[in-house]
Structures are given as structure tokens and as C-alpha cells.
Amino acid sequence: MLSLDEWIALLETGKATVEAQVIVTSCVVAVALIVTFVYENWLRKVIEKIIWRSRNTWDDYVFSDKLMRSLGYFIPLVIIYEALPYSLVKGTFVYVVCYRVLLASLIAMVAHCLGLIISGVNDKIQASDATNRPTSGVFQMIKIIVWCFAAILIIAALADKDPRTLLTGLTAFAAVLSLVFKDTIMGLVAGVQLAAYDMIHVGDWIAVDKYGIDGVVEEVTLNIVKVRNWDNTVGTIPPHLLMSESFRNYSRIFQDKARRISLEFYIDFNSVRLCSSELEESLKEKGLYASKDDVECDVEESRKVNLTLFSRYIEKFLNEQSFVRKDKFFLARVKQPTPTGLPLEIYCYVDNVAWKHFEHTQSRVVEHLIAVMPEFELRIFQSPAGMDFNAIGVKKGQ
Image (cartoon, rainbow, N blue to C red; front, side):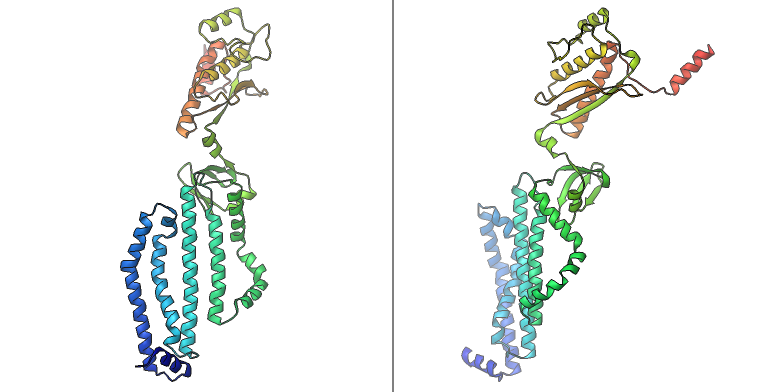
């Protein structure tokens, strides 16, 4: 039986028979399969138990199930690659082909494992980051860089060329590549900017009126931002459009627990008048009168106007409500007159930021103010409807 040194000498001189090379190669493959079997059935389970029992959560994400399975394919490739010089004659066609294919496969497998590790790190950051920063685009960029280098090394291995030579040649195609992958490059830059400036997170409610986007962000990747719209439809938009176009992010509403109510009532001009003493006494009896001690008054008139008293009552009413944020600005003000009436704006912030609760709160404010408005002898401007014209016709008929 030949020793290892004698067998290597036969391989170097090219005197090893084909049958012997086949037998040795078969033995190497068998050893690789046995080691893989041992890894899959015993070693992998031991490693996974160690990972599960550790208090550190990083290893749960980094050494994921996909990575552990990929290592099962990586082990036989390494064994066969390392044993190749001892099983085949160097310089032969079969040796060269096997060597280049195995080297390219190893490079691809290393890049694949690195990509899984990068994804695991991203998953861990996403799970532990309470702000849900869109880091997926940054880690996708790192994975693309890894695969770009891997592709260059694979081509160099298959062509038996120096990778630096390929890099020099690829610079000539940089302009062409930038045109082909323009959207990807723009998305890459925009994704990094969105993450760096903390402009958007998964779970944020954003609105881009120009593209019909109005909902909750579900995913931020290198090429798209996936949004679940308020009507349960799914919309997508490239990240670079969020940087070049204006969009609204409503997440600050939920962070500060302060959502704005901005409503306008159009008051009929004919109902605005000076208050009589009877009206003031009636308002005081019904608890609807707001004095200068109840609200902040910059101007005190000798003869009060019913609209002024109503504006004061609105501010008093808002100040008494528990859901109105007192640390935020709130007021009732008259705006520029319009052909459809005199606008009276109610402006305040409430702490009921959830959609349903906010709408109920806003409705409560509107319904109450509309109900008490006649007590101030005020009327809301309303365009005549069919019933109004019918009433006019009936009166003419009489």
C-alpha cells in the first residue's frame, strides 16, 4: 500500500492510474458525505441547543436556521477542495475544471453565508429598535457589495484571471452600469438618507397625495416602500421619490399624543349682532356665559357681540374638556369673510390620537357647538335646498 508521500509523488509525475484516481476521489466524496451526515444529525443539533440556551439573543438571529443548513453544504465543498490535489493529477483537464468549479462554488457559498449573517444582524436590529428605523436598505446595500465582490472573484476563478485585472476592465463599463441600475442606485442612496435622517420608520403613517399613498408603512427596502393604505389597499413607492417629493409623516402625532382639530363654522352674517341685556342674562342662567375671568381676553368691549360671546364660550368649553391638551395652543377665531358666510375656526389639540377615538372626539365637539349656537342667536350659513324652494313656493301659493 502506498504512503501519502508516495501517492503525492505519483500525482506530481502524472503516473497515477485513472482507476486509482477514481477510487481516491470516491473515497474523498464518501468522507465528505459522512462528515456532512454527522454534522446534520449530531453536530448541528448540539450547536443549535447551545445557541438556544445562551442568554445572548444576538446568536439567535446571526446563527439562523438558514445559516446552519448552508454550513451543511459548505463543509463537503471544503473537504473536496482541500483533498483535490491528493486525488487528481495536477494540470489535467479534469483537475483544472474541478478546481475552478470548486473554488467558484466556495466563493459563492461564502458570499451566501455572509448575506445570511447580514440579514440576521438586520433582523436583530429591527427587533430591538423601538423606533423601527428603516435599516433594511442599508443592509441590502452591504449584501449587494458583498455579492459584487463575490461575482468578480467567481469570474476570476472560472477564467483563471487576476481579480484586479477584472476590476480595471469593469471601470470602462461604469457609465453603462450606472444607466442600467439607475433606479437601484437612486433607491440605495435614498434608503441610506431616509435611515440617516430618521425620516421614516416601519409603522409610520405617511401620505403622498400625488401618488395616492395614505397609510401605514409595512416595509422599507432598497427599491420600494410598501404602504398599507387606509382603505386596506397596498401601495408602493420608490424611496427616491420620498426624497425628491414632499410627503407627510403623521407619526409625531402618536409620539406626542397630540392630534389637531381644525374646524370652521360658516356663520350667517345676518345673525351677528350686538348682545341685548336679556341675551346676556339668558346665557348666564344657562351657564353659557364666559367672562374675561374664564378665558383670556385681550380686548374688552363696552357693548358685546353675540359672536364674541360664542367664541369665548368655545374657548371655555375646550379648556374644561379633559381630552384637550392644555399645554398646546387652542383658540376660536374669526377668519376673512366669504360669500358663504363668516368663517369661525376652532383650533386645538386632543390626546385621543387613535383614528376612531379622534373622530368621536371631533364629532362630540362639533355636535355640542352646533347645538348651543342658537342660544347665542347665531345661525350657520346653509345654501338653500329643495325643501327651502318648496317652502317658498307654498308661501307664494298662499
